[in-house]
Length: 325
Image (cartoon, rainbow, N blue to C red; front, side, top):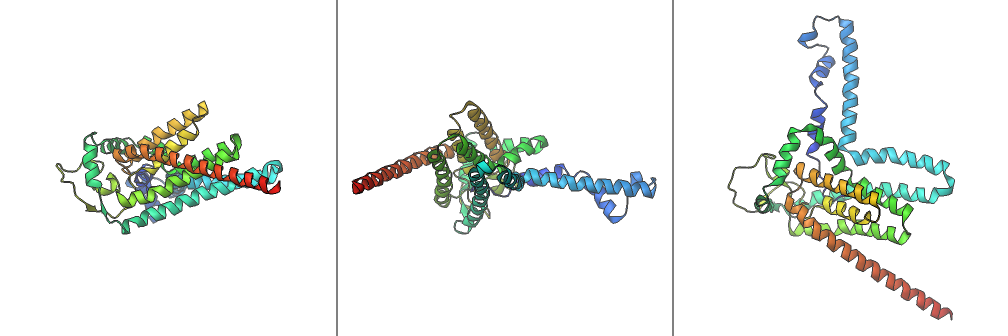
């Protein structure tokens, strides 16, 4: 359910990690063999080619699951929830809510992605060079972290799962509240997540920023310096400021704070989200810093709206009691 969930720069790198035998697979498909096995018997070669092809397919599936963690989780979760609905008849209502929420959270995420990708038509010129200049005061951490991620492939897997799995993290928070908190608080949580996405759109239009991975071809290497800040045309979603990934992770931390295990899990998720957004080139540090007051504003507005709704409900109840008397 994340508005700035663009196509991950991590995905090609993940697929590259698990495609080391691709040349051998291609030779198998062509009916030829690499030179170092030409001396082997043809029957052994056919068996080996068949095994490597199956292994290559499994690696492609594994890469897909990692790169599209939330979609893969939905594919696994829906049939499990259907089985639970069939066998656990006493809790069917809650199972229906969970199933509907799982589909809804992913649908909102896809719709948010569609909206953010089309905002570039309205704001083709971006402020990336200005934000890069601001980030230079902090040492341009997105470039340095991006270089570290590019040279340490093992970290790509958890960061990719974290980045794409943000929708499922928000959904998991909803499930926790559905079981452990009153319905009113659960509804307030859903409103906060929705408000987080809706308010981000005018922010993107007012201050369009894409991210270093889109603005600089040299990423994660730093561009030639010095740079003169100016508006630049970039064909990418202008959903950098604020980082909705970071604001959503902060909201999860806020709502999970009441439980010690919730604080720990949400904090770890927040740290991984920060590393993923910076290390993938999706955001500058400035974007993440802006997400902090943005999240505070979302919580304030959500509390105000909830208080007003509660007050109106009380007035209606008092009016109904008065009319009955």
